[in-house]
Image (tube, rainbow, N blue to C red):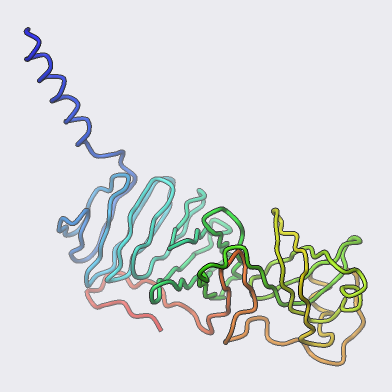
Length: 293
């Protein structure tokens, strides 16, 4: 075989290898048409690593490795990988016991147990709604920092703030536990250690406060630069639930855990707020458009 023929054979082999699909990660099914990598599909299709699935008037179910189930509502789009689904548009629902995640914009969403179901919806240009069903759901930023623990039956709204990646603001009960000061933020369902002026902080133990300042570490440790009292007392039950030192009974009740307007937490530049309602689940087996409130 001459040199030119050998070179052509090698080149053909390289091109064939480069154009071959990645490994199989699952199967997509729908009672209707959808698209996989822009190609129209009806019924079902094998999914290779990195495939793009786009639904039309019917929702689609993705059955992935290790028993992971991901569902896409009508008029949704996502890229599917071996360990994550990247939601580009619409609404998705996930149940997994393998550590699989949904990525939505700059967020990573993971379930807290095998029976937990996470629902994720993209709203507008930058807002992400996350709902927890049948168990807790955890939300992280792209660097792996925990932004919120979403309780079962709860929906939270996440919105990155431009130019504020190092901004932290929490609101909740200031308590003392094991000789340290902590703040329990009930919207993000997070507990952070707080440090700063001992006299100023100590005077607010048992009250509801808003604090601002830089934070670092996992779990978070916050250096308080600004403190504002937003409620006198109301932390008896919160202290008991957090295993903190008991506080005196307060004359004023605690506010609702999840305010329906404004945000009570700003974590690494991401605003976290109660969404004020549930996200409707993905409806399978229909050719009607899935709608959510």
